[in-house]
Length: 279
Image (cartoon, rainbow, N blue to C red; front, top):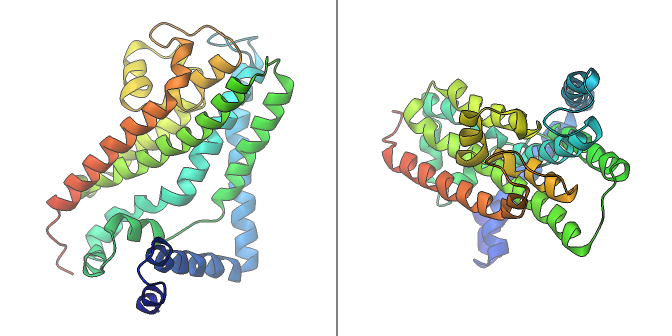
């Protein structure tokens, strides 16, 4: 079926992507086939999203502000970070399955196909329940944009759009970055998850409360502060903390380029290192 689709499309870009879209469509149809299970998955996913939002609310419940921002201001940080990470998780989250493929030797099958290995891995699964997490983040963004007093201009509208697109890029790169390391770690998924999912949690918090080592790790090396915190400071005309001035909010595309450069280097390094699982 895949070969037939490729030949019919005549080698164009659309044709080259046809096998992947066909596989993804079949994955989505398979999930919707079991409707009760699908609805439970959606419900549980949206519940987790609200619980994580409640954690932020509890944190701010007894203080007027934390790290120089109020709850309604940090709600915008949470919304943008959660929305970006959820969409990245939808597309790249199952890169977490790579250690399973390595141990079972399943990845060897991917090497036999004439398609890029990373694209095959991305198309190997898709979890639609993650859309509800994105809906929670989008709802927070809308509420926070209405509740906060923002002096809107064309530049700030562009900054918001640029931040969301670049934030999705940064989060997606984190999954590929972690997947590249799995070729060496095999059973070290928990370590990489500490940075990927820990980074997601860090991205939803005001970076002003971080210690200097955390600012270095999640502020610059894994640029999670660039996803939402720094752009929100610029949107709300707030000053930045030490080491993180608010003008860095315009540098989110640079953070995305840095993240993808490192992700592709680690991925290529890992692919070249792999010698087969004996499958």
